Length: 307
Image (cartoon, rainbow, N blue to C red; front, side, top):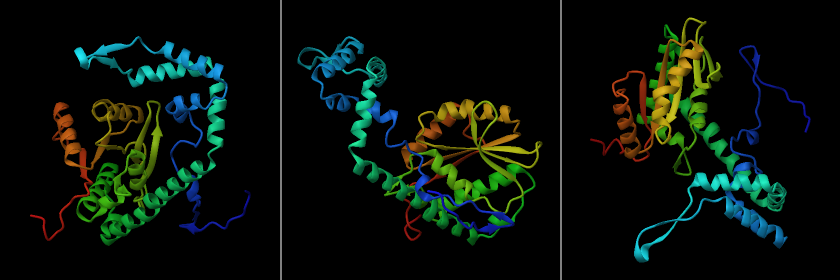
């Protein structure tokens, strides 16, 4: 609804206030992923028995012929792959577009579910980007060099902040900032946003997801066109980590004419660390100084028990 606000001012410029209830990044309540994920449930909700039978018949016809695995009594039909199921669902929706109307109706009949999910996402946003970030900034302010030292290059500026962030996460209980309801964050975008909010009082230009034609880099830190550094954040659990390390950053560097890049990988347990180290070894990047691993595991021993 239209409303007039008096915005706060800092450094001679206005601060835009963003309502916290629109800071969520997940899909809308009515979205295509749920349409495909709840396909069978949507079909079962169709009251027209003839139409329902036609849809199921067509869907079954789009699945590949059954294959069997095992021998003797253990012989059983092999389940279709997720890719095969997705193709069959898409073709069925294209053949029976009225499925979309039934899906929308099914969603509209569950307003409590929509509100519950929306409230949960807002609470998560408040925890991650308000309470956690305030704690992070307070930790950084305890060491005043974080906001006062002015390195000579964009690479030094970016690396210094990454190193500070690593120290806070690993040694000052900062790892707690990356957990919600005792579970680690699942989205690299959350890590990116938290890093951006630590930038303050810097003469360098810091931009997130700048797309120079080959896809958006997480961060571009620059001081003019001749001094530019990219910073890429990855979760060790990312299934495309190897491909990203091997190709993605080099493409971004060429597209944005950046001189250097920093790759930050956050891991939450020993298995993720081992997988990351194995990938780095295969790529012969284990001694690469521009790759920073950050330990965000929640099982760190207390200072009294640490050896």
